[in-house]
Image (tube, rainbow, N blue to C red; front, side, top):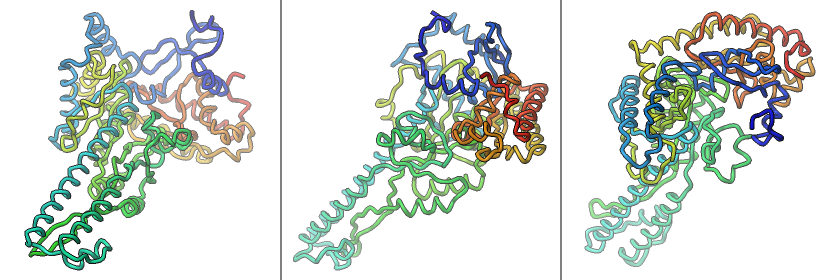
Length: 529
């Protein structure tokens, strides 16, 4: 049975209906390089220039011949895809190669241990789970040390080697007892109660406003877009969102969440109450370049402030390189260019070479918990096929002294220069160009009060970017989309195979779009009725 004979739309019919309003409900039949072919009304194929690039998943384009040939070779060899709970030397080779490149870019030799997954959101969830396990285990170690200090003081008082002075009772707001031993037990009970209340607080996550980290049960609560979060808020963890480039908010967050754990000590024959700061932070998630939030690049200055927040609070950094990594900005890790150093890294999308469903969570040795591997698993992760494809992707990136990285940076600079020209030519329509390498965005001015009713209503219904994308598709055979949480921004994430002719073609198309917007000419939009 094919799509022509299916009686009813059962595969996300509401989404299909929404796409149809902007003319985006087309069927794609095959793809090669930067070209994806859609089915025309007569059943024939129409070539479309693909600037969406699988939402950043196609650094080497659709069906790259070297990757496809290697995939065929793996399948012809009948590679054991399903060989769970066994030795996976290819996964270890992949982890080692990722480490080698990361060490070069980050200037460190600390190992990063890999947990493989199938999608970016799944890898984010693995990072969050690991960070929570690490938080709980570290807290347990601190509480054990506090308990040991209590026992030491209890013994000292019992042997008459230490007394309980008045300031100890004052510190925990208790009246002096009849004897040191009796009073000490009251003090211990109060300290234990306070510590239990403090250590029992639910974990707090930190993420940036406009950030996007997936839509699974955990990751959706780390994604800033309230429309994605609110229907499921009862299921999720507590997240504090921080605006970009606002270190003052980070300082406020430290003050808001700072708590105290108390321990006992004795010195010079006197018992003391010692306080230490305690923060309930589990993890700070951030993208070096925010993709779905409108292609915003974090500044090096704010990256330094984030690193300082992490040091001050003990909160580990989870660097989400799902969309920005794997060569898209001229390096494996986009964050390395602004000095970000993560406790965790998450890679996906282009790591699968446009063929394999592949992602990885990497945690540095200083945070690594071996027990995590016994409580987390995934049926399709760490398989032979996807790991070998990812190794091929890294091989292509690293070939010829990293020629692919240089090519991505150079092609991205050429694309950006064109987008800047369009923006300069239409300042009343085009607001700003943002991004780096082959991860760029063009933001249009808000059309909510536009003279043209079509544009006005599209903007007010959050469909503006999709309407423009529909015109580009049908009027110019160019495929792109707005970013998910900033629909006035069109994304451009082509492969590094991008040619000057393809850049020129997009320039003509965007010039047409801007002219239509300037002249309030929605009637000229090439979107099927």
